[in-house]
Image (cartoon, rainbow, N blue to C red; front, side, top):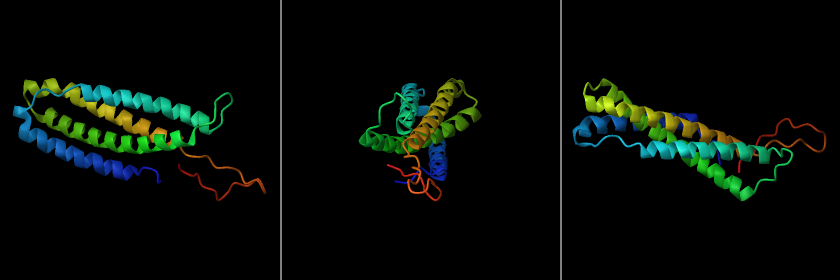
Length: 159
């Protein structure tokens, strides 16, 4: 499995921003207020993945007093991190598209929805950051070569 490409996340976010802008500009009059529940869910998921990243990194680096990691759990965390980073980038782009449209709309309803759009961007970016940190924490560190003590030319493996 390859590490998540930042360029793929940026492209997904830009595409989602365009979709968010188009949907909001077409259907804003018929829409209810922007909900806060997805923001809370994304923020909670970001916090959980941040804690997992810190815990997993300590286990993989064999810190004193920390048990060894379960390889299957680490593989699952890596998959979760890859999926979360993409989902977070899509939601961040979508929220940014909404925010851009709302910022240009002079109505009170649009002004009232701006905090939810800002919260969506912040929670989504936090999720992307936590997911990338968790993905990085799941990498197996380089092992020094036992024959000559030289670890040059070795690359980190991924679960």
